[in-house]
Image (cartoon, rainbow, N blue to C red; front, side, top):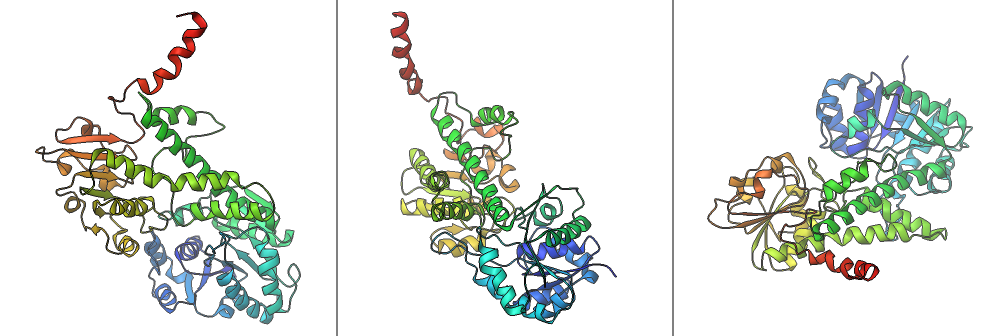
Length: 462
């Protein structure tokens, strides 16, 4: 008899993990408190929108079922992944509310089970949360001792929305925080059966794994913020070009090119909150939180700074088209999206704002409460505008031509935050093209020449 794995929580990550594991020929039981999610999986449909999920579920329907009953899943599987929300609380920490409920139900199921079972938390938490917050729930409701009556691991995933299945099945590495070696061995053996790219496994204590998870995301946010600082400097420096600088910096093997493309700030459901959570935990244990706090402050300053740039070209009262509302291309998610902050700031500055996103329009409408007009096509959005703000590099935008933006009878300012539009925009009639992070040719040389002319002269007597 082959393995059977259960997955508690059928959101974007949980449903994608369940489908991905089933695609490797392993039986999977999904669990959710939402009737519609369970019904969708049992009907061979995706319970949430995620790239490729519907197809993977449909193809592997015979190996994947869902239930509302945690006991059904636990008693009929050998290992349970728990992927439930751990939302940020008012301190910046992660709430254990939903995880504790899931662990209570799993604990009750473990009380009925003979033989060892391993519980694996995948949701992001802070150091100490599993050992001192959640494992006691399992022990209390099961009547068993962790490491004896059941195994436990903390093993978060490093995925991006829009490519969850691919990222889950092809990770850079697998992070395993283990209560004991036997628990880690069990999880590692399961991973080897459905992770086929030979990813290395980093095995460590629960607390070190919990810290490693948020540290990785916080480090990436620092790198993004550094690149965005370079973009701001290059935008103000005669001849400056952030892509030229970043390409050179990225050649250093200590740094690398990924996440070094200057543009708008980071957003989404993970990066902002993980950075804030690291600052919270550092403060809680008496360590310095200066770096994550500064990164968060700088990231939140970008949207107002971009709106200041719009104001340099278009007076208040003008119409600005915002292209890209999701936090990244090919996503429905607008959580902490820079574009949403820009829309709100533009409206506050008395601009008329129109917007378009291929996927995120309905979600964005809920966030901006009707303060901007969201169109259902990019060309409708671009009619009679004074400026265009390209906030993400979605193919729907990179395929635009100058003729889509202006008929040449009046000038439209195009501010391209990713420098992703074709070179034709730079010389097209009726368009003032502003590639953010690439200095205007008209920027006066005095911006930097006065810094050094007298400084050098005093050493040589000129």
